[in-house]
Length: 227
Image: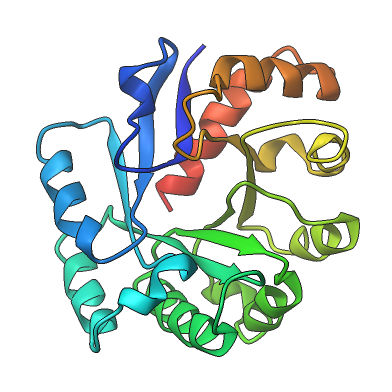
């Protein structure tokens, strides 16, 4: 079994700690982490890098961040955009949306894979998605996915939207795993050391009744990060 952790952070490189993990997608949450991640990728070919501003950290933003992000992304065509998004339970939704839209527009312009965090703001995300033609959109990963059945059905209309999970239980995940096609499912730790990806894949395999799902998830992840 080969696994790529589809979403982690700079303090937890899954490929160093879990035997079957051969690569880690590392997302930043603020501009201070950009230089840290740039240094890390110089020393490992197992890190897939995504740069962005998480909605929890917008209060630390300096003016002109989008220009600095664009300049950074242009230095390497493999660099992706993330973690970006919206969170209903954090302050200043208007600023969250403005920051998200700037980063989303940039990812579309440069055609870079996007890693999205969304909590309680799915209708706002859908509204933004509908402003673009589907052919304009790069690959998009809905990380730590928690949308309901209606939201999932709407997102499944987009060929290049994928869904990543870091836990499966009756409240969180089983219904969505059943609803989402196998070729759109990925797994992640979100930087949590108690998430064992091989065990998570086995759970998904059981739900889907698919003994070959590990290879499918690995290929889904490669497809997502390679654009």
